[in-house]
Image 1 (cartoon, rainbow, N blue to C red):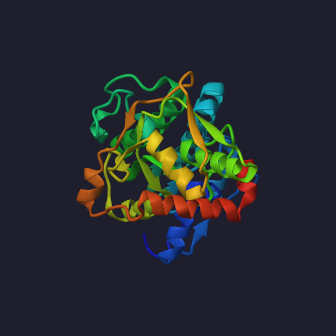
Image 2: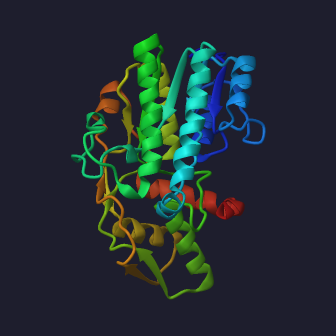
Image 3: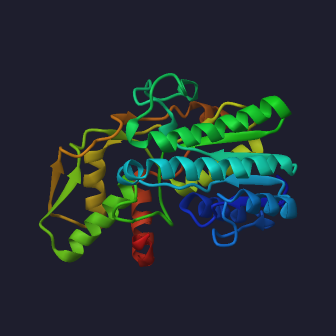
Length: 313
């Protein structure tokens, strides 16, 4: 990308999209095309086609998505599949129809099989069944990355995909039912501290292992890949490090300053037992993460305190 290239960031108000915008601006890219959901509904094909025909962006970061935690995924399977599949197909297809030089599709590590080898290499995609609690979302994301691959094979486009591990950081979603585990814990322990609660109950038994990547590190990788990678196989985005949900819970409680008792509701689902990405491909390309988990959680909690309205989303 040239510094004056016309770049469209889809989903620029979300956690990932806003981080990509910050990273692009930090690196001196100023010709950014941005649209809110009210200005451009990506699930409406005619709107997306008109936008691309008028703006004709040279580069596209597709970070828009309907996202949520276990509860949201289980309660709205059809919505998660439809909304994500239709918006990504609209954007990718219109980008191709209007001569986009390069597109980067943002997926999720949930695309990999529930019992994938650990750490999970990019090559394990579609080798066995998915985790049922987020199967609809995963299928939509797999469709998006495969569409990019098929366009490359049929029309020699240069469309790439990146699969992040669990993300957190500024502009995260702290909704009590629709958020992911780390922001949910930040909110839960903060409210418990403020309300003087003596105990907090968390889901499952705390045994699942998870990996977390600070969203600004992901954004740095996204820009790096746009400038340095081409290929049909996706690129994993993570740290290569993992910890148990129990350890994460204790770490968040400590950073937030909650000193009450932590209980576990084993009747609630654990989700996938382990989700560690093999990040050797990104490392071989010359990229590594910068933000350690403890530092990142401190930054995320600071953002939570400074932006209280985010807790309502």
